[in-house]
Length: 507
Image 1 (cartoon, helix red, strand yellow):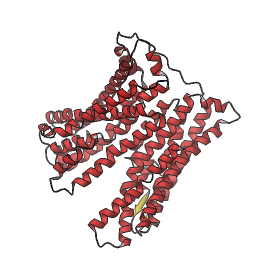
Image 2 (cartoon, rainbow, N blue to C red):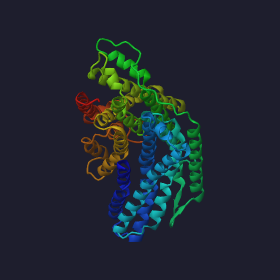
Image 3 (cartoon, one colour):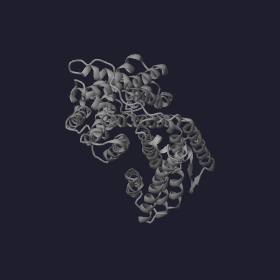
Image 4 (cartoon, rainbow, N blue to C red):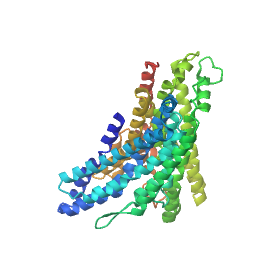
């Protein structure tokens, strides 16, 4: 119930978006009529705000929360216990389908009601807004169908997290195709805005049909699945070094599913930006490729992978008993914490390297010069790695203070805020300052612990224009404050995480 309440409160975001748009449009068009203002706000909300809000926050939340919760129930043996009662598998599965639909309904009601009430408070027409927001919210029904298809595979909370994040990344990739039954593509083609909002009935029908089909397939897979108990943790088969660090590092690196998930999902996200490299090359030639490479190495989607996986790192080890088993050996808490951290940093390094290698290889394939491409790739790949380690450290901070769905929920919200909402807000605020835009952005971003924002400042120092060749990488060094902000918060997060873990109750 607490999770549903938090999800509903999060869905009240449209009220904030309405206020932002009212202030923005009235500032630019002081004499605009209420009818025209209502049209402009409705169009902006339905074409920009809501698709991104649903795509980059609500979709991963629904996937991860639903799958991780079922995985937790399965891991604890509650699923087998319930099915030992006079309860059929189909009825039990339908209960989870109903749970997923509740999450979708709560989000849809929050989006529609909050935005409508905010518009009514300004005397604006809300009919088109309500129709459009409800139509866009139907995408979450398709997401629930995907979660139900994957439900039988979630045999633990961690596997549910991995499956949810993996499904989110794949949905973003599939959203590039013009198949309106895919929820992420549906968001871009479900409604059209002309004199009024019109809904594509074909897109709605295809989405609902997909959801029903996937749900039925998931039910049949669940019905046929053998519900064996999840394997309990057994100590890794390696000998501990005197300080235990080598054993922890090696064991957790090779045996942790989280390690492989870091690498696989980070590598998969590289394919998002291949089209951008090609588009920049078609428009601006070789300078376009180089500037696109710098932009692509921001890795704006990677926080949605790194932060949640970092948030389950320490917490999962405590909940499933891994910490207690390891600490029964000649091993100290410091060794376990450092070994886990080194394992996760190694996974982030490998994932970031493969991400960089994919983009650099494609840029070279398009015709980018070898020496300049490698120079930019090495410099901004290093900045990307520092950014991801900061997100990982923030995930650790959440993990030691929160457990279960609280940590996951907070990590996804923070990934959205630090990766999208905060950079957009700071960038918009910097346009009204008398200084040059870049200097104003650099100054305004300093107190904000957003790795994506600081990467943007450093990237603009080298890549100020899409059509011009990038400047020398040495330009980055003229903004030492932004470089420091990629490192200092990481050290602060890890220090607080260690101090909290050292005193934590591991029972």
